Image (tube, rainbow, N blue to C red; front, side, top):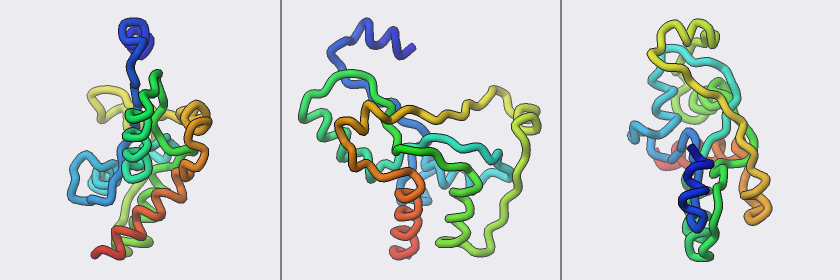
Length: 148
């Protein structure tokens, strides 16, 4: 799909977001909101897009008229358990979650899920100061906690 886009739209900027995260726990599309509402989670590391970090980058890329396809995620990966443990640490110490395996998960889902560690080297060559996902998500939780 991405290759088709680049052939037909070679002069465009394509940003590939993954599991967007914001400071709004009321936002249903926020990855944190989603996984805290799941009964069980699979503990697999994934790439994520922390919107407060990357939206200014998107604006800057647009103003600079950059072109190409970019994996638009923070460097590194973080697991569902790590995110939920930070939720417990900063937001709700009473929160409890359970894990299940990928096999158990596939039995209850209508379609499969992908787990990805996306390469950010292309983005980091232009924006070398992007914060690592683990540092960035901890800061998100600290900000949420401070604004309660």
